Amino acid sequence: MTVGMYARRKAWPLEDVAVHLRHSKIHAADCAECDTKEGMLDRIDRDIHFTGPLTDEQRSKLLEIANKCPVHRTLVSEVDIHTRVV
Image (cartoon, rainbow, N blue to C red; front, side, top):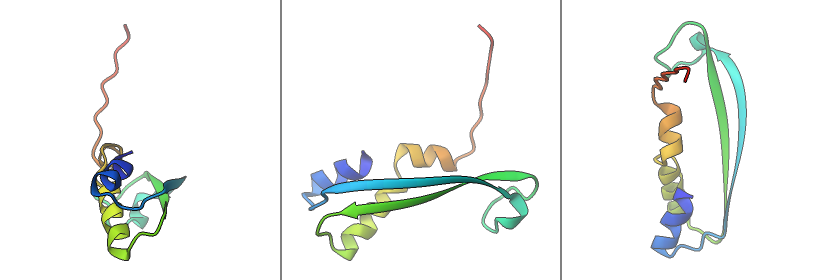
């Protein structure tokens, strides 16, 4: 949604966006860029396909915008969940 809204606002020729996700578990020690070094981590591999006659610069900017969307930011941030029985 965020990418589509951005492209519409810029009047870019984005026709469609398709996102494919794969989830797996990896050893934290195998993740060089991760702060956590023990236990298992969730890994999400994401493939984004932009359809339309976009320039390389537009595709790059759309990827940058995709990385700033609220869902992406939530998934890559530390999450603190408080649960209560009601």
